[in-house]
Amino acid sequence: MALRVREHIIRMSTDGGCFIGASLSCADLMVFLYQKFLNIDPHHLDDPRRDYLFLSKGHDVPALYGTFAEMGWIDAARLKNHLKTSDSLYWHPNRAIPGVEFHAGSLGHLLPVATGVALDCKMRGQKNRIVVITGDGELDEGSNWEALLVAAAYKLDNLVVVVDRNAFQANIATEDLIPLEPLDRKFEAFGAAVTLADGHDFDSLEKAFQQVPFESGKPSVVIAKTLRGKGLPSIEARADRWFCNFSHDEVRQLLAELHGEQQGALTSAPLMVR
Amino acid sequence: MNYEQKLRELVAADERLVVMTAENRAAIRNLPQELGDRFIDTGITEQTMVGAAAGLALRGRIPVLHALAAFLTMRAFEFVRTDAGIPRLPVKLVGGVPGFLSDGNGPTHQAIEDVSLMRGIPGMQVFCPADEADLVLGLPAFLKSPAPVYIRHIGRPAVTEHRPDFEIGKAEVLSQGEDLTIATYGFMVGECLQAASLLRDKGWSVRLLNMRSLKPVDQAALLSAVRETRLVVTVEDHFLSGGLYTVLAETCLRHQVSAPVLPFALSERWFKPGRLEDLMYYEGFTAAQIAGKIHARMNSLHGQRSGRKPANGVLAAKS
Image 1: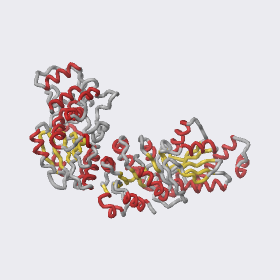
Image 2: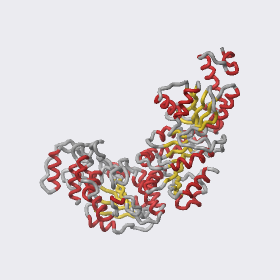
Image 3: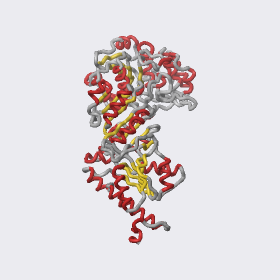
Image 4: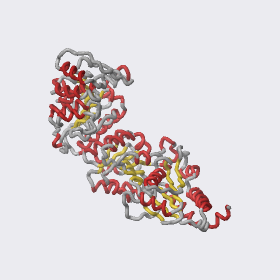
C-alpha cells in the first residue's frame, strides 16, 4: 500500500507540482498509522472516542491524500484534481476533505491544537490517542516547545508526537542550519518520553507504537528516522528536490524508478528557495 | 453581578464552556477552585492557549480565553487568525487592560490596534463594552454566538445605567440629539457621557452612541447620525486606522454618504504612558478637552452654514 501511496505522490508532482520530498519521507509513517495504529473511521468522524491524526508539517498532503485514496476515504480519481480550482485539493491540508483533522501549512500550529483535543479527551475520561506528525525543521518554531510544556504539565499521555526526522529544513540540512540534536534529550527535558524508530520499517514502527504511552503521565514522542524522497534514488536526500514540478515524461520515468527500473536523468529545474 | 460571577453562572449552565488563561487571572481569580478541570491555565503561552482552544472547540467546547489584550491579539495573532479564524471556531477571546487602561505599562502593553486586527479576521465578532455592567449584559449573547469573538474586557464600574435589552450589532443610544453625534465604545464611553453633558450646557443637542458591538456594527445608527446630525465625532482609545473611525468611513462609502467627522483617536503613535488621568489629559482625551474641541468645531461649522442660531452666541463672539 505504501508503494501505491508513493505512486499517487509522484503523479501529484506535475501540473503545478508538490512537496514531493517531504511527502515521500512520511508516506510509510502515514500508512502505518492509519492502517495499523489509529482507530479512525471517516464515516464516523463525530465519534468522540475515535483517535486523531494531526498533520502539522502540512507539506505532505500528497502522502495524506494518497493514503486516503488507498484506504478508500477519497476517490482516487479525485487526486487528479490537485491544484484545480474546480476542486479543493491544494498544497496544504484542507479541513474540508473528510479525514483531514485540521488545516495546516503554517508550522508549529497543530501540536498546540492537538494539545487542546488531548485536554478535552482527558477531561472526559476518554482513552483516545491523539497523534501529531511534525516535521523536524518545523521544530524550530517555538510554539511546539510551548505546547510540549503545557502537555507535560497536564500529563497528556494520550498525546503522541511523531517527528518525521528526514534531517532537512526546506533546502538545508537541519544540522547545518539550526541543529536539533540531541533531539531525544531535548524532548525528554521538556517532560516527554521518547522512542526512536525507523520511519520506513513497519516492524520498527509497530514495536515503538505498541508501547504508547511510553510512560504514564507523559506525552510520547516517536522520532522516526526517515529519508527525504524515500523510494526515488534520483531525488533521495537532495536539498534541491524539496518542491518539484515534474514534466509528464519525468513522472513516467519516476514511476518506473519507483518500481525498480533504471533511473533516468531529471530535466526539470530543481528548486532552491534560499 | 460582576464579570466573574456572570461567567461562573454561564459555565455552570453550559458544559461546553471552559475557561482558559495564559496565567492572567485578574478577572477570574476565584474560578480555578470552582471550575475544576474546566479551568485551564496554560501558563504564559498565548499562542499555545489559542491553538489548544481551537482543539477544544473541535471537540465541541466553547473556550473563553483570558490574557492581556496586547498579547492575546498580537503575540498570538496568527494562531487566532489561522486556528480560530479560518475554521470559524467559537473561540472567545477576552483581552484585559485594553486601550488607555494599560496606563503606565508603556507601548508593549498598549492594545490600541486590537479592534483593527480582530475585525480584520473574516467571521470574527468584536465586542467593546463600556464598563463591567455592559460587559455582563452582552456576555451571554457573544458566548452563545457560533462565531469567534474578541471582547475588550472592561472591569470598571458602570458609567451609566444600561438598558437591559442587548443585541449583537446594535448600538446603545445613550442620548438622542440633533446637532451632533458622539459615537464611541469601551472605556471612552464614560468620558463621552461627561463631554456630552458639558456640550449640552453650551446649548448643543448631543446624540451619544455606545457602539459596543464593533463587528457586526450598527450601520443604521451610524447612517442616521450622518443623515440627521451635522457632525459625527468618533472617540476611541485606539489607533485612528482600523477602529471606529474606519468603520464609519467604510459605512459611509458603502452607502455613498458623507459627513463632517471629527475623530478622537491615536494617529500613527502610541500614547504617553502614565497614570490614567494624567495620560488622558496629556493625550487630549478628557471630557473637557473632547467637549472643547467639539464645541469649537460646531461653531466653525456654524460659520459655514447660515440660518441657524449659534449656540450661546459663541459664533458672534468669535466673528
